[in-house]
Length: 231
View 1: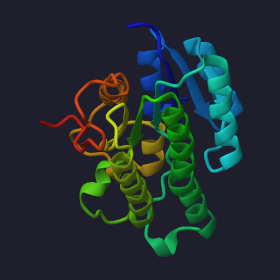
View 2: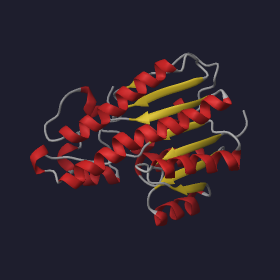
View 3: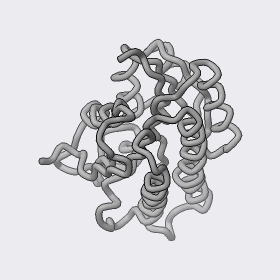
């Protein structure tokens, strides 16, 4: 099939790193991260390309995508694995923490999808996989801000999927349950279900969606809700 080019946002740890690791042997991979040392370590480890990108900055998102296109010509797929945890009662959350979660989970998601789809439409094909959260399936105490910000991303993806009017550009979302990742360490063990999936298992599903061909079945808007190791 030939090598393709994929952008993995949040590709320096957790699920994003697992996705990049699965893709890198056969494809060109560019990981986006907001910590220079982590981007450098990941690119050295995987032998892939990387870009320093704070997704809450539209200019950085725009420039990072432009750099990928300039280097590789096309972008065959983008997965947005970047996310910020904001757990706790609303009254207990620092205002700065709330603002930052919205910047990353809401504005960052918007900027990433805007730029990704701009390039995919120009070239006429490509896949986008947004990583949501199983927490959207039902309200859960202690995560009102996190759930609200991830709900925004899910709603945005649904609308954008319908707006493509073409199977050649697929906009999809996957909602994993809690996983033992760096984000989960910040969440706390009380939110880790007794049955859960490892990032490597969920990454396999992300890669499956990223590798869909333009003429494959129409799945734009597909939502994989339970990706947490349960039947």
